[in-house]
Amino acid sequence: MTIKIFWQEKCPNCPPAKRVGEALAAEGHRVEYHDVKDISGLTQAIKFDIKATPTIVIADRTDKEIKSWRSVVPELIEIKAHL
Image (cartoon, rainbow, N blue to C red; front, side, top):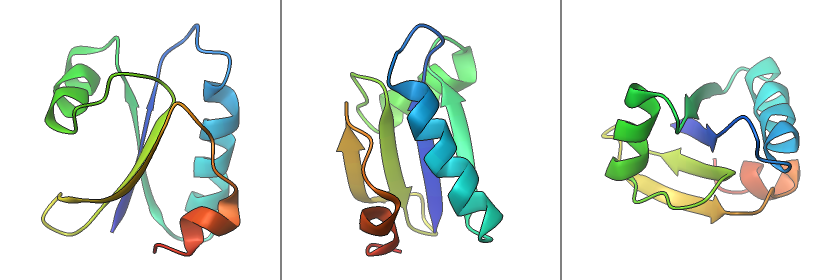
């Protein structure tokens, strides 16, 4: 599984989302960061129908969305419950 974090520079809630990603990565989880202002990040955002930041998506091995949190930063334990 992959945790995808969609963010942008002027988003006030994006730094906490990135910190959650860092904690998950430190535990060995695969985490990707996608800046929606960057072409590759925007491409991923379109694929997952992301319309707000921060958004955290858990995707399976085939890159299909399993769970997402849009415009909110969930607690670490809540994300782990879906991994």
